[in-house]
Length: 130
Image (cartoon, rainbow, N blue to C red; front, side, top):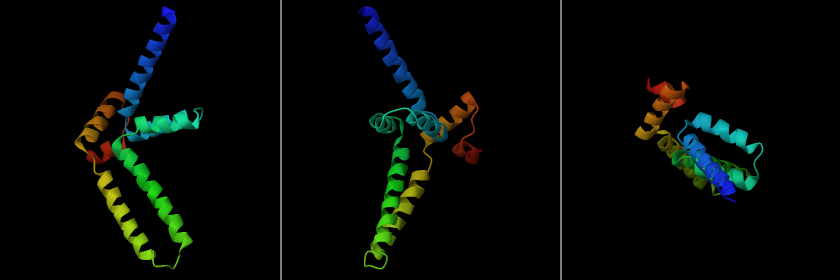
């Protein structure tokens, strides 16, 4: 009984450590890990893993891309209506959000530099900062 409990606690600790390591990895590596995980995980677990592992800027980028696709489908449904002005305004606001979301924070810069030093992977943010 205690051996089973010990195994469960150690497995939970390993999963927590792996999640923490993945959370602080650069975006490109994190996405490739999530894509490999999606191949064999159930849908509910995929959504929960994305929710936990994606940082706030990555979550915002995902929401922005969802908004863009919905605006695109809306403009196709109503090609010459009065909503065109609202759609164009919404698209300009999304572009503004994208530009603000791409601004690298000091935490992101330091994390990418540290990842470059530790694992030797050049990220997009670190190459443009050199």
